[in-house]
Image 1 (cartoon, helix red, strand yellow):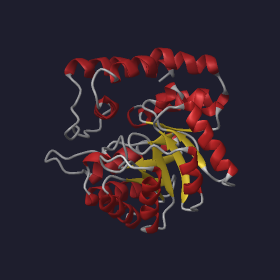
Image 2: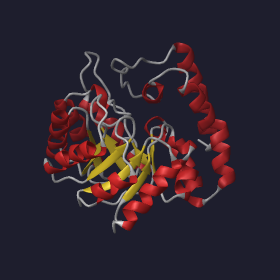
Image 3: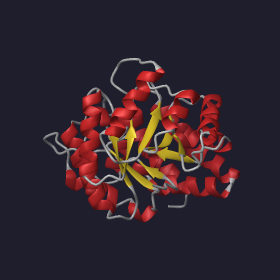
Image 4: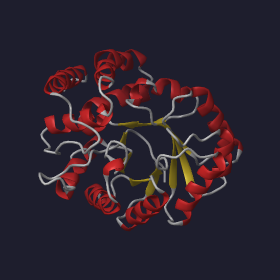
Length: 301
């Protein structure tokens, strides 16, 4: 599985009764395909994995696979309690996913050996390749990654911590283990803000939540990034991403709920977010609308 370009993390639309809306999920994914995402990560962080049942993960992933139609790889989320993670892995595979993003286990902190056992238990339950997510209570050291890289099913590392030194050591350790096929991702919130630094240490890929609500802005940024056009990239950082991050940081959980609000503002009635997240206030929704208009103006849309 080789991923490239902007990685798309769709929201999970809900019906008025609060269930997953598979039809709107298909519409959401299909509407972004002409912008050529390098992969679709369904039922992951932006898709409120934390709030989905095993069956709902299957519904979300199945809808994304159907909408993608083989045009781009679709991966599903897994994680949380081990039994839940194994269930999600199996359900995502049955739904047609081509890979899995392994989010942290539920609540507990664990030693390195325990995290390795957690990932390997998921790997044993599926034939799908795994991307491990370094964040929160799943801190994966270079030594841990050397051991995980010995498993051919583990094919990627996504950094959600932001310690550049540690991530550089992880990249070197995995390469030293002979895994030239491994892929590395910047998974920080609003990753565009930090991606220039990550590329410098051998992490060329990044997740883009912005792509879910404003693909034209996200692809405009990616074009500047891929071309090495720092003037253009910094113009978008100053005019759109920096104020977006300032707005995002005003309320915990806005990294997801602002994106979903932006999707709604774009015309898809995706519903609100599930508890414990909260939807943006009217004031913040208005600020987001102004930001999106400014971002589209900057990319000429």
